[in-house]
Length: 504
Image (cartoon, rainbow, N blue to C red; front, side, top):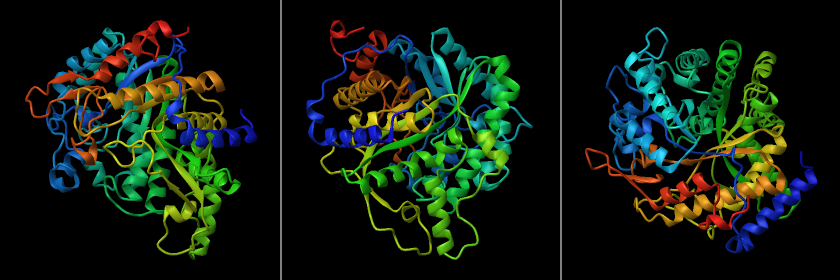
């Protein structure tokens, strides 16, 4: 474990490097270890289509895009999307051509359990996934399966969804069905994708489904239920499936790398606070058994000042803390960008509360950072070293699997030079961190193998290594420049254009 002094120095160095040496960075010329996993990712709703075929019932996002199309940037939906329900063999062939080790995908709850409950299992939906897993294994590709990726059966949402105390049981029942049905083929599981987007996005800031604004209140309740559901599913796997199936279970957490805006002690402390309110909010219960102390103390103090009898941040029971602690076999990390954090005066206590006030810091992205077609997605590969060290230092040196990393454009160009550069530089900084700091990063996953439906952005943002013609009935896939580059990386474990220049 690195010392606090070393960690503080690293924070400052990374910040300074980001400002003065970004253009002078030299790519790492060391090959990745032979065991390192290179993969690609998608999710069910974003690519499958077939929204009402073969017994599948309506999900939350099916319903949203049908009844509130104005919430989607281009007003479109994923009724067909990439049509991967019918074209999965073509997608597997693309992955085989690129040469990936693993494919991260998700399961559609409403395709497997039409009522949302295990009283009825939809065989055609089950067979779709079994056929997909069979095709992957036949091509030497390991499935990495996310059980819940941002969509829920509409029937359960109508019962208050994640906010319902019964969600813990609904979800763990579904997870048990998935373990039982697919566990012989799937050895890498993640319970949830990006719970921060589900809870803070959906019930806090309200920029994501179900678009409810309740900062510092419902977003904390949502997270509490989701974490308890994760822990229960993990323990079910432990007790009933692990001995026979021999798999691993984790969760996928998304994070910015938050760096101090200056060398001042105040800004360094502010950056640590921001990291705890962002990544620590979810990771600390899973790896250390409870919410971060800074969250508990600040929210309790501010709740009391608001005249509340108890903290707005719920408390875990002792049994729940035990179930949560150590409930991940690796650290699943989605990472795209970074931010700077500056100390501010503590915000005055007021109603309604806000997460911004609870944190009491200011974060931002400088205007001179490299931009993309999304305002928030600044290109910051140099920030990877800080983030990976932070995770290593706070969570007992876990195996870290990068479960998403990628960049978008709004043109779909086949000459996606920025995407090639983005992947190359992020991977290089990851390799630096492995080499220089001894951080155990075990794999990397590009979002995404194909262009797809990007939630509220619709089809306006393209993340794929392959272009998809969404105006074609065939949904024609065409490789981009980035597909060729990533193919070279997968085959050579080398980031340089000239494989012979790499060092084993």
